[in-house]
Image (cartoon, rainbow, N blue to C red; front, side):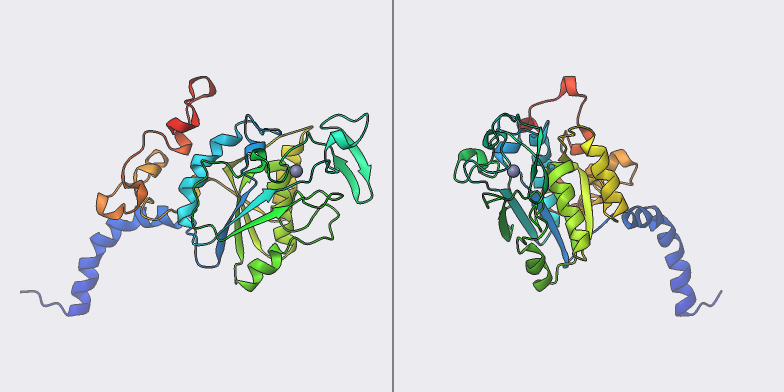
Length: 289
Ligand SMILES: [Zn+2]
């Protein structure tokens, strides 16, 4: 009879088990798991910025189900809200002879002029009704000064006036900010860039944003963000509780494990995930997601 001490036995016994687990572990290591010092920043998911609003971002509403599925993975969530006065300086209507999407020169620099949008207290400025993030801890409003616009969640367009978000995040020990929302090339990009300047790690979850792309602004925004060290990731790269081995990742070739590993709201397979969106001509309305 072969004698084996306990250590040898455990090593041998663990061998096949470790082998069996390797692909799963390797897959999981490619995912980002949000932790205690991470925060999800949901930028301007308001009626004004979705189709039907005053400054609609194409497909802006399609990110809402994605954000709703992402948010539970984050213990900390902050939301921003564009919140303008009537006759705000960023509105083309406040500059005689100017049209939306033209620019003008203001004391703090060149300003893109927009249609009237997100006016304080109007339904247009409300957060979208389908956004479901009850555990969000802060709603920060920006752009409420009559003579200064604010794309960024951190610094207004004069690049001096602070919104207070830097202090809030730092006081709470939050160090890594994941951005989603509207629009990729304006409020999301400016926020992510300012997050880097303020010393935070910044990631943009690309498929949970949509851009306006006026005059190549989307490509420029990504180039600027990449150059500043903002990471570009996708919804599928964020590990959500209980789903890493589940149906949501099947199309990425991940091994699938039993239901005991699939706790949480995603335990029930869905017919459509954000990465199973059919081509434009065959898309269902967002309510079908
Ligand atoms: Zn605005």
